[in-house]
Length: 391
Image 1 (cartoon, helix red, strand yellow):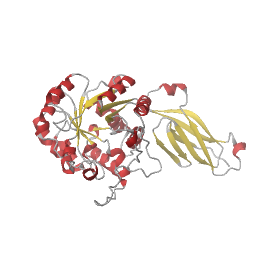
Image 2 (spheres, one colour):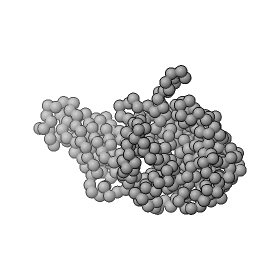
Image 3 (cartoon, helix red, strand yellow):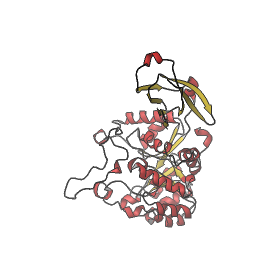
Image 4 (cartoon, one colour):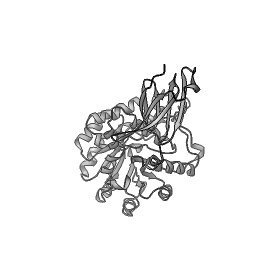
């Protein structure tokens, strides 16, 4: 005899089984249920702070499915009503995005968490692949600037996103023109005093176009972030009250062998920031990539310096997923949930946004409030943004 059963699921992508439900926050909902049953009847139910679908197994279409034991019913639906379509997604700020022109010759697909396998190689043999592509569902690289921009703008609008972006100024301006005003915040990066004079750099910050300094990546030059050759640039940012993002941590599989011979892992130690912070006590710094994998040093630095934040970009989609979650959890357990910011290190893979967002959304060690802090609140506070403009 068919029994009525009620299962609660989010209004997003849901796998509903006879014994429960699992959800990830994406805009449309797919319900899959292994049913020796008839139909899934959907009705709206309200709970405090969260909208759910109440899914009841009924006998409404029993005659249609009678005799179909262990049938699989796939029901795809969008929002429950037109009012849902008008609701904005809770705001998200991605603090680590790169703007670059797409080169179709080098725009290769990529598997998320591809650094789960780093077998190494032989210096007398062809170099191992820097990016993994052998997986069931690789992330597709955009093949043109327009394709990437169109996809990015659509995702930003749908997910109510704001991005902090560095790189090609012409690309940044194109994105600004295409996006909702204020949702593309330009950042200027520098890694060596050979790239730009201090005067030119200061003028760029003073122009009003650039609101942030970053990505600063002296590690790729084999230099400490406290190297005095960059001191005048940090002094300019400090004087103008500009937040600074500094790359610290790993760069991927075989970085020093395959792509950046000056790169030194030792120069990614977060404690190397101490001299810089001592010389510039008013400088507000966030450590890009959270200094991964040097959790102890990162925790020690943040404990000693109250103005230091981190982002979790890059590592969130490249290293083993269990390792990523363990690292974020370690920072939260150490007391720094209010200083972790969401970021992707977005380059040419548009769907990297949803992939990275899913990591935080599905982190069962984070409360709903902690997720909102990482996605939005911490960045609002760090970058001194007007919260009301993004909701």
